[in-house]
Amino acid sequence: MLTYCKHMRTFCLWSCLLAAISVPSIASPPLRIGVVGLVHGHVAGFFNSALKRSDIQIVGIAEPDRTLFDKYAARYHLAPALYFSSLTDMLSKAHPPAVVTYTDTFDHRKVVEECARHNVHVMMEKPLAVSYRDALAMADAARTGNIHVLVNYETTWYSSNSAAYDLLRKGALGDLRRVVVHDGHQGPKEIRVQPEFFHWLTDPKLNGAGALFDFGCYGADLTTWLANGQLPLAVTAVTQQIKPEIYPRVDDEATVILTYPKAVAILQASWNWPFDRKDMEVYGRTGYVKTIRRDRIDVRLEHEKQSRITSPASLQSPYDDSLHYFAAVIAGAVKDEHTLSSLDTNVLVTEILDAARRSAKEGRTIRLPLND
Image 1 (cartoon, rainbow, N blue to C red):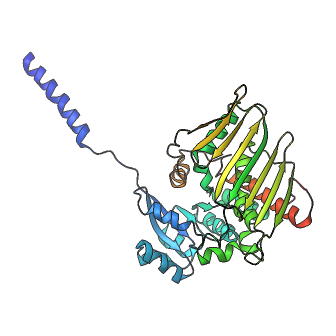
Image 2: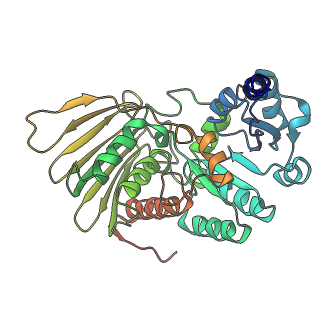
């Protein structure tokens, strides 16, 4: 009898182990996403990523220009059934819980307000809005509709920027004193952006400005994050048209100074760099860190005789890309407040950009906060 029980216990143990091995883990269902607009050139990057992933399912594409949809459909083998001529039609028929937005910046407000009425979460390409007034309206709509609104910046997913932030937060650099951010490239025409992208990038109504909004938003976003959500006291900006024959309606060069009680930030946004760049310098009272593209930093701390270049650890999911992060925020696994992509941060970013545009136009320093 004892031998029988022993064999039975052994049999049960092996049966349980085999069952555990043979039963597959239950994967989370893919996030069902609608795409709003195809006029923003970054949509190509979205398709290149999303169509290869099992965690994302595209359920509809809202774009009034059918010819533009057909161009992308041919390139990425998109089913004709995905096409909707309007956002309202897509939301009503495809029922996505979330959308990614590739319209011009001016249309961001309309997208958020319509999605809020359907309780659909929104992630858009930077920047949030063309004006502080629009940003406030979007924040109101998001609260009313109880939706998440995120702003995607390429630089959010740079391990170099996260490493710089961590050094500052840990006190390794001392109190923040100066931030210098460089962003831009040779120019939209020079890098041959898509015609529909070029059309609205160079329209002051649809883009808000030129390089000032297109690339100044990166620096305003990073600086607001580093400053722990503190609004600067004042904004002073100078914009230029170095290439008016190409960009007659908008600036192609912008320098913005943000004045804080004990620090200053200088944002250098340009369509005139010899090469594309997205990097920053963060100076504390006792040390500094300079980011080198996506994944390296140059650091010098107190009592060190020279700087050293290191490679920070890679960012881990869901902090490694926009779609992982969007899904985590919607699922409640991540609380998106006071981050690079959060709505509260980007309302402040828009306030800074709006003040910078006013400063450049009026030739004077603009005090914050703005009245509207």
